[in-house]
Length: 102
Image (cartoon, rainbow, N blue to C red; front, side):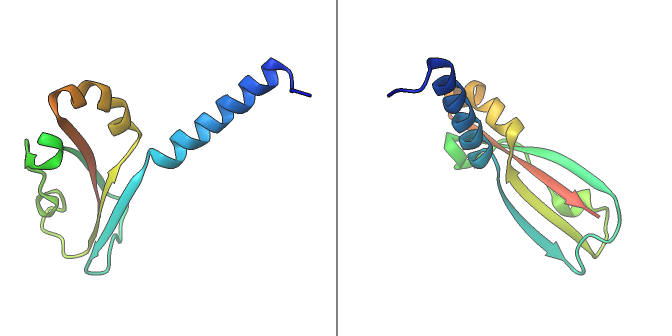
């Protein structure tokens, strides 16, 4: 016996939402010194062409940390980057988010 169509559609929507949420964010965190000791956060977006072979803009985490010796750098492919993909992929471009916590 098959479940009703609305129940199947609900299950499919929930499964799709879980799949997008699970795959939408991949991150890497690197601590310099003691790591983040305050509440300061700066965010920048790094763009690449040819599917990651060449940088379009330069994002310098040391400049974002303003000369501090303890901070945390997080690079991630987040939800906003996922939303930008349909616009960037035809240009063979990708993006990632760089977050510096001080």
